[in-house]
Image (cartoon, rainbow, N blue to C red):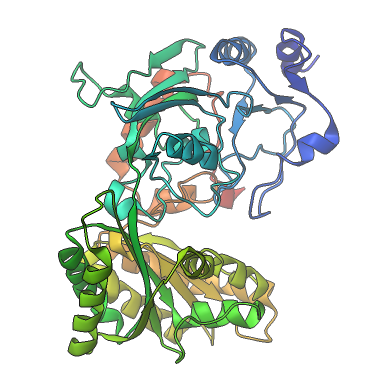
Length: 479
């Protein structure tokens, strides 16, 4: 009998799902790059259920792959093709356990959908700031495990900055209960931080205590056409100055990205009349009824126009128009898909180096890309840009993009390395980025991660083949 059958035999029937049709929804990653095989999906109802599952897997040496909303880009929640790895879904652990209004904290199960956390906070006139395009399907446990970034990181930080405490099941089945939502707790190592961004390789997050903020009652959103890419950071500094550092989002959209989307989605329209090479989507928000953000935004745009940095722009007159602006930004990836797909580069550099990176990276694509198109967009206010390469119009994308991966991507990553940046700003490592981590990651950091992995998970049952590449193991690209 296969080892996993011993695990399944020790679990109640309501936890185990073997239906092939249901499993098919969990065995292919979001980008349809990886497809694996699993004998069963496990759906526990409590941390104690998760503990029992992990203990059984440890006892019988059965690998376990945690899955959330399956919205990741790096194959971090996809099983391999051995047919021996069990899938673990936290979707039933989806309760709002506590909201402490005065402490401005919320405690939730790992299976909670991100938008449900938003709604629960909003009912108390509070706000949970993590905001993603996939927020109606991604789960908090997945956000924590991948250390998700989002469009408001410039003001509120990334996931790591808004997690106060975690409950997690460790690889030996013990439950680490560290849910206290304290702002200050200096009792040794912050162990919960070790699990954030670990993609389930060191334990299974089952619940989290999260920071909440006062709900904004005053918001202003503007979409601007700007003169040059070099104007990015001066405009950010000016926007922060005019709004009293109330900027929550500072998003760049290249003219090529916007043109591609509009060409594929004719129902969408350009908010400013004349095409531009560069656009900014800027949002500021305040919980103060006395902060004149409209006046601040108008003053900022007027000065930008007078300096020649802003070419054109418009401020959203109402919530409908604000939604239209954000709809353009959030659907840029769809434009790439409709345009034949892209080779994605999830880059971070210092904010002060952002414009220079985009300029030098564009030169590399022009020189070595054989006519490739660029789609560039992202959270440039916090140093993150999606630098994606597409095939020329009318060229077979599949073959062309393979050439991009071999001829262009290494040059882009070399540039990022020279600028002391990161090849993975917010997507994580998963399967996809292990080879990049081997080449560009800090070897001392990799060694320390291997030591931690072996210490906590000596049987290597926790999401094997993701994040950690132990010596002697092949990366996905080498298989």
